[in-house]
Amino acid sequence: MEGREWLEELKKMLSGRKKDFIDPQWPDWYRDYATKCMSNRRDDDLPIQQATIVVIDAETTGLDLKNDTLISLGGLKILGTTIFVNGHFEGYLPTPEKQEDKGAVAIHGILPHSSRYTYELEEELLVRLLAFLGTDAIIVGHHIGFDVEMINQALARQGGGPLKNRVIDTGKIAERLQPAGYWTPKDKFTLDSLASRYRIPLSDRHTALGDAYITAVLWLKLTARLREKMSRPLVLGDFV
Image 1 (tube, rainbow, N blue to C red):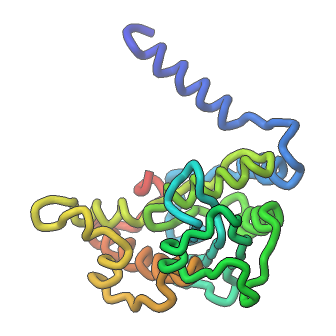
Image 2 (image 1 turned 90 degrees about the horizontal axis):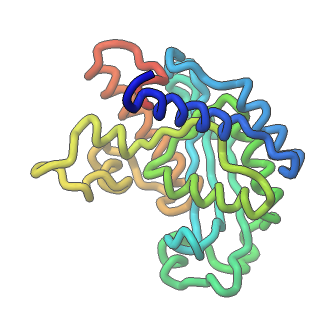
């Protein structure tokens, strides 16, 4: 190989090894999930209508990736154009005393130490989440990078590694359909703005499960528009 070709090939090899790495110190529940994910990788040619989609939303004590933590997770499964509302995922964690931010509470409405919620240990919530995701589902969320990072940090605190499922951001799909510019500034791609544009009711906004449902409906509308734009059925590789 000449030029930079050998370097790019080396990067691919190292990246593959890191992705396939199984740490014997991981807890059993995470090691089992990671191992199965490696043997269940989805092909880019998979029709998106045949993929199991899991829409995830996280509520946190704030927006600081280093200091804030998860307090609620919500999730819904989609297959084709069907949102499976009855089989949803929902869970709550107690708010740490030093993170009882009144500003955050005003947004998500989750009152610290409220008797209306059934709290779990962080490890219990994560074990349930991985079981809900399975090893072949595609994670979808709006500006999902933040949510995934918060979940990954929780997994790390419990001795595990990061999420292994493929991830798709509905915000990026929306920008792809109508790129940001003079007529569509960046703030037009918030969940509120897109819900208004696509006429999606904002019921239970800023609850994890409520936002997951809004995002699930947005996913169906965006993929329908993208399918029309591309004039063919969508495949997983269209979202890489």
